Image (cartoon, rainbow, N blue to C red; front, side, top):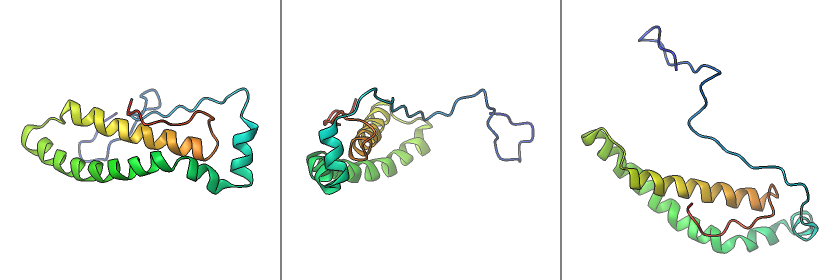
Length: 115
């Protein structure tokens, strides 16, 4: 990040990576059975992901309330608690894995892990 002018908004250099990275590797082969679910019965993949989506719904409510509370922690301590950061990061990762599976970017079922 460069800051020549303190009043100007920050600009990011091309060599500095963004703090958020997403990698979904392209598979050599994809499951034809899962693609049938995606082509004919898209709702079938959503139904397959329903258990994870229910857990994600509950976790997202916790996420929203917790992120709001963590802003007070940052306000008063100047630090974001490490445990909360890892928990919220895990929720975002689970959400991305679930969306990748539903939209056919990967054949690997997302599971329930926050790691």
